[in-house]
Picture 1 (cartoon, rainbow, N blue to C red):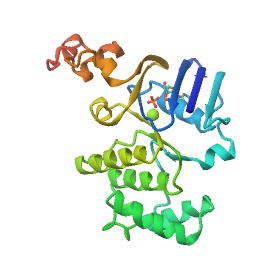
Picture 2 (cartoon, helix red, strand yellow; picture 1 turned 135 degrees about the vertical axis):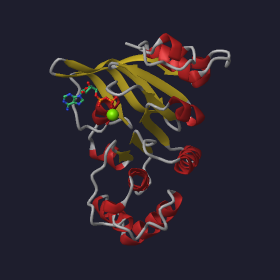
Picture 3 (cartoon, rainbow, N blue to C red; picture 1 turned 90 degrees about the horizontal axis):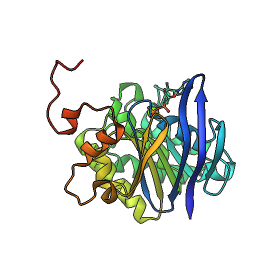
Picture 4 (cartoon, rainbow, N blue to C red; picture 1 turned 120 degrees about the vertical axis):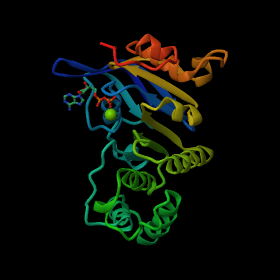
Length: 253
Ligand SMILES: Nc1ncnc2c1ncn2[C@@H]1O[C@H](COP(=O)(O)OP(=O)(O)O)[C@@H](O)[C@H]1O
Ligand SMILES: [Mg+2]
C-alpha cells in the first residue's frame, strides 16, 4: 500500500520554487529517508504532507486520504524540525498534554509515556522542566511525543539533529523496531551516513527537485563507492576535491 504519494507537486514562495514537480511514493513498512541540504524543500514537502501548506500544483495523498483529513491525522505521528514546547512542563506533563489532545485515555497515556520516556533515555531527566533541556534532550522528547498515540506513519523532520552518538543508536533501534511492527517512517535529514544505516529507500532533493530516488544499494552501484561522495556529486555544488575525499583548503573562493 502507498502510504505517501506525491504527484508533480510544486510549491512557490514569492520567487522561490521551494518544491518543483516532485513525484514520489512511500510504501507501507518502509523507512524512507528524505535527503537534501538546507533549503532543498524538505520541510515544505513535509508541511504539505500534513496539510499545513497547500501545494500550488500537483496531488498529495497520505494513507489514501487528503492531507489534513482527520482520519489521516490520527494515524500520523509528527515531529517538527524545531518544537516549541511549554517550557514549564516536564516531559511527563508534556506527553500527558499531547495524549489528551489525541483523545487518549489517562491510563494509556501513563503507560505509553513511561515506556517511551525510557525508550528515548529521558528517565533520569523525566522530572526536570523542558526549559532546562538541551537541544538533544528536546529532540528525544519530540520523538516520544510523535510516537505517543502509536501512529501508523511517522513523519520526522530532521530527527537526528542534536542527538549525541548514544541517542542516535537508540533512535536507530527504535526506528528499526517500528518497521518490524509494520509502521512506515518518513524522515528528513542532511546526514547521509546516518540515513545509510537504516533507510530502505532514499529520495535526494536539490532546490526543490528530485535528483534521485531508490535504494541505497542502487545509489552506491557496486558498493565500492562512498555514499557521501555520491550524495555531494548529485548535489553538484560540492567542490571537486571534497568529492574526491580531500580536505577543502582556505583558498576556496
Ligand atoms: N513560509 C515560507 N515563506 C517563504 N519562503 C519559504 C517558506 N518556507 C520555506 N521557504 C523557502 O523555501 C525553500 C525551501 O525551504 P525548506 O523547505 O525549509 O528547506 P529544507 O527543509 O530542505 O531546509 C527555502 O529557500 C526557504 O527559504
Ligand atoms: Mg527543514
